[in-house]
Image (cartoon, rainbow, N blue to C red; front, top):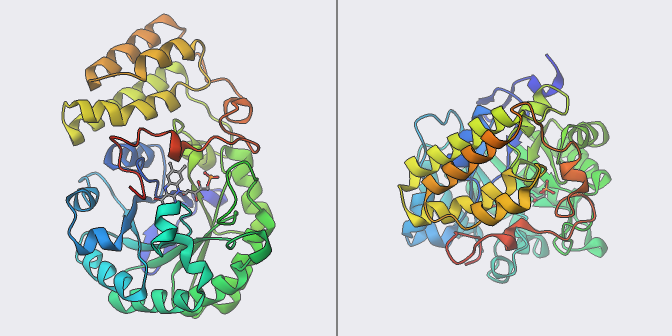
Length: 368
Ligand SMILES: Cc1cc2nc3c(=O)[nH]c(=O)nc-3n(C[C@H](O)[C@H](O)[C@H](O)COP(=O)(O)O)c2cc1C
C-alpha cells in the first residue's frame, strides 16, 4: 500500500485514502461528487455555504445540503462574517447527516470578502480563534479549516493562522498555497504550505491532519506537494475538473489517462447522475455544459465537439454527442498526455479561472 492509499482518521472519522475532493462552488454537487467518489476520492465536500443562507433557510442553500444514498462520506463547508453567525450555522449543519464540517477562511471572491466572510477573517486574526472556538462548541463532529497563506505577499500570516486554528481544536487543516491577492497565474507556494503545516503541528492540542492544496493537476504535482510540504493528505480542486481520473491516478502513483472507452462510460454516467439529480430539465443541461467542456479537453477535434456540447438544452443531447464522438474514434485513444500542462487554460502561468468561466446566470456561484 502506498502513502496515498493509506487510510487516516480525523476527529473520529475514518477516511479510506489521502486524496480529497475540495469544496468547489458550482461544481461539487451530488452528480460530480458521486463520480469522484467512484474514481477514488476518499472524501468529498459540498461547496461553500454561507451562514446567512443557512440562517434564512435559503432554498438553494438547503438544496445544496442534499446527500445521495451512495455517498459514503461527505463534508460540508461554511463561512460567515462573525463567530456567532458561524456558531449558528454549524449548529444547524450538525443536525444534518454530514460526516464533517469545514470552515472556509480562504475564499477570495470580492462579494464574499466584502461581506466579511471567506478570507476577510485573515485581516482580523483574533476572529480566527473565536470562530474555530465557537464552531468547536457547536459540534462534536470532525472540524476543519481551509485557508490561504495570507492577505498578500507582504502580509503572509499562515504560521499565525495555523497556530490559532490548531489551538482552537481543529481536527484537520488545509492550506492553499496562495494569498488572497494571488490569482491562478501565480504558482502555489509549497514552502509557504510547509511552514503552515509545521506551525499547525507544533501548536496542535489534539491529533491534527494537515492537507496541501494548490496546483494539484496530475500525479507528479501531487507527489511534489507531499515531498515538499510533508502534508498528510492532498485536496484536489481544478485538477478534478473534467478529470476525475486524477484520484485513481494518484492512488496508483502514475499518470493514468482513461481510454476513450472508459472516458465515455464515466461521462455518460455523469450525465445519468445529472439527470437523476436535477431532472430532465434545461437547467440540468446548462449546469452540465461546463463539465462536458472540461471533459473533452485533450481529445482530438475538441473544438468541434465543444461547439455542440457547450450549447446542449437537454441531457439527452449531451448523451448523443458523447456517444457519437466515441463511435468515431478508436476506443483505445487516450487523452493527450500533456493536456493539463500545455492547455493554456491550466498550467502554472494560466490566467484561466474556471469560477468566472462558469455560466453564472444559471449556476450557483459563490457570491451571487
Ligand atoms: C470553480 C471553483 C470553485 C471553488 N469553490 C470553492 C469553495 O466552495 N470552497 C473552497 O474552499 N474553495 C473553493 N475553490 C478553491 C479551490 O478549492 C482551491 O483552493 C484552489 O482552486 C487552489 O487549488 P488548485 O490550484 O488546485 O485549483 C474553488 C475553486 C474553483 C476553481
